[in-house]
Length: 427
Ligand code: HAM
Image (cartoon, rainbow, N blue to C red; front, side):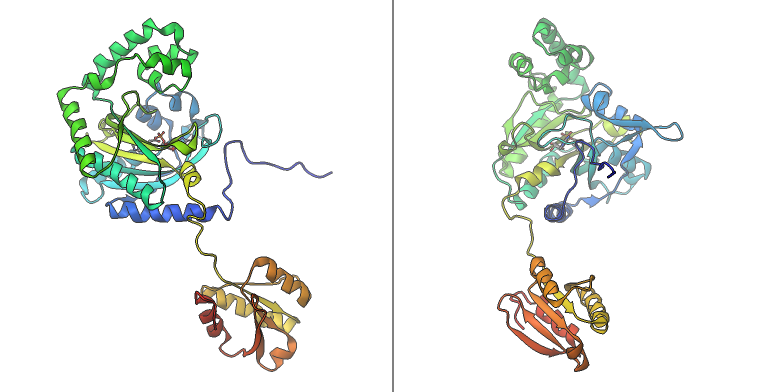
């Protein structure tokens, strides 16, 4: 009896050849653009102690309450597959004392994140982010700069029709009275809220503002706004972020009800939205998180950054963008053991000279080998038969024109390398 086939886990996707090229291209553009803004790459582990995210993101957030992949490892330690990277980057920054090295304050990282959300278009359980973080700078210049870096990157990918939404979430000082007022307002309309929000209203009223249930959104239309509660310091900071963005000619929309799904934000919060994406329309989001480093046990340094969702980004890429130019491929059709051995060596040599070369491993007939070459879409076939080999020759065939010529085996690698590397494919 045939064994039942094992499929992947729901919400965890394979990225197949053909699609992977786009990912590679997006990553290479990210590296180029973010490096030019002074960000250096850091790689952090996928698994962290659960406490890092509980403390970093906030106990009463959806992510920590119900979306984390958390388990006890074999030593009984509670660990979590990272749902986001900011807390990990901050942890690494503290752990390696990078704050004493002024050249390492701007970092980026690319990789998979894990959240047990309900999968749908644009929302997966394993997804990928490009994270950009800047530590140690109070000045609102850096808030504007990271937003500008994000938009420069998206522009480089030729993604159009994006909106930047901006809000200020204030600081713990001015948020406390706002939170109290919001809680009061929500208590009055509690009967109109969804079950989750009835609970959130008490545990973390700000989270109600993040709810996507239409009836909750209606209720929020009359809710108090954080912007009306900002203290002088936060108001000035927010004004300057807007002024600097205007200097950089960045268009944005003030969105007083945008709170983001993580508790560490203070002051600036932003999201980049793409209309084409449907319900899951945030391509990226971020903001300032000045208290996070201290909360994780490090120095009291401010931070600001964002993350881009790579799956959503790839969905927005235009037709043909990032697919790259196909490599020119050469096929060695060999007849007889002697020719196969010579051909096998030549294929390896060509590959070492960065020419994509393939051959047949099944001892097929010449006709079958030519059919295979055709299916692979090769531009050139080298036919190596026993007769040719005995005369120190091979036949070179241009697949498109079907022209062929006899060429000496001596120096064939150099000849093919030169031929196949030339963009016009001419000898
Ligand atoms: P976030 O808003 O939770 O922020 O995620 C950032 C982006 O990741 C989203 O805008 C979205 O594009 C993508 N994303 C989130 N969840 C999923 C999912 N389940 N499936 C597909 N894509 C998803 C953060 O993670 C913060 N750490 C960003 C940040 C960095 N703030 C400061 N520095």
